[in-house]
Length: 324
Ligand SMILES: Nc1nc2c(c(=O)[nH]1)N[C@H]1C(S)=C(S)[C@@H](COP(=O)(O)O)O[C@H]1N2
Ligand SMILES: [Mo]
Image 1 (tube, rainbow, N blue to C red):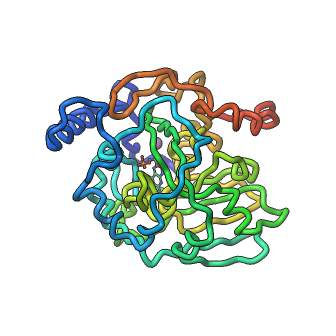
Image 2 (cartoon, rainbow, N blue to C red):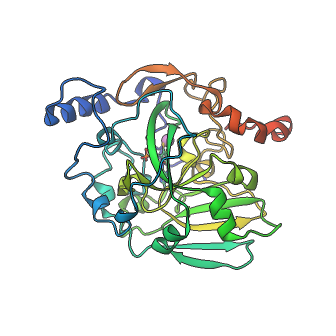
């Protein structure tokens, strides 16, 4: 497919973190009567932005116990900031999509599990939530646009999903697919994108402890703009791998071609492991801008998770260019 229009993250590094986030932050802090940064906690009330999450039928499941094994080296990004800074192309390509994303209907919501599994099935999200061991993990998130954030995600290990799905020996990859409904999501009328959004990983990556299925954030069900009711978090990979609002999970022998890979394979490849030494073709990945504080800090190999995941790539690294 040829590029008809470049997505908004096809921008130079200087523009990679729009000034508006800093304006927003100031406006939010002023509206809340808070002068200094760093004093915000996730516990502050957010009357309009998280109302939908509070009305979610799974609300009584949260908060879930924190798994203390996952520690951060920096403070959490305040919920107020995160709720207003999202990528969700189904609802547009601007950075103020939190309003547009409220059109997402999260119930009824069924997840189809198919392909190379003992038995294909369709499960309602609330039944899946009851069957899975929920926990909270503090994770870093590094977008390919060179900004980063930290989030308290709630959800379950992808390992638990593998046990639940019972893949057969034919399964080499897991493919994830988002909803496809242009009546609900206006961005999906943009015909030059290969909807629906698809992502994938190897079975070995899926079985890694870090791979996390996200159902909540900040001690509540996922807000719509975060990709309710079910999304991924693969913190050692660029953010576009962490697909939102998952409808279908397919176990397959074929390597899935993801949404961005289909659009620009030399820029957004299958592996997409965070690597400060491999620049994006049009900007450096050596540093990142931390949302909220605005600090520019060095980017770490595998986004700082090398101890857990580097071993996955020993073999592949020899035969294939694994970043981008
Ligand atoms: N379905 C879908 N999933 C998606 C995206 C998207 O546009 N659609 N954007 C990706 C990108 S580029 C990033 S950085 C993260 C952003 O997650 P956040 O909005 O919760 O910060 O979601 C990823 N998952
Ligand atoms: Mo991203």
